[in-house]
Amino acid sequence: MTISDTTAQQAELIRLQARVAELEASVADYESLLAELPDLFERKFQQRLEPLLERYRLLAQAQQMLEPAREAPLQRAALRWNWPLVRRLGTQGDHKATKKAA
View (tube, rainbow, N blue to C red):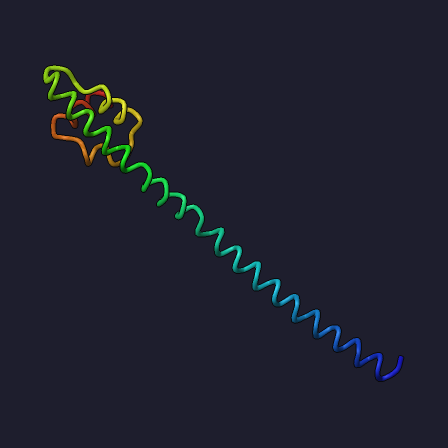
């Protein structure tokens, strides 16, 4: 082996080490993005769920106004599915229905 061959091999080795470092940085970036995905999906799901829960609440409220003696089936269905915001959005009377169902 000559000195020029050794120098060429060292230059190639340095280039490959730099490429490995770049690829490792890319992998670290992708892993960090993957770690954020569950929170991103949760936030997106909540954003889409809130208008639906509001509609359910309004429909249940309208139904209670039309039939005050009966419990609102939409509200009961939402509570049965245990959606987190339903309990907060519901009225005081709805909590009694929740305790009966539990």
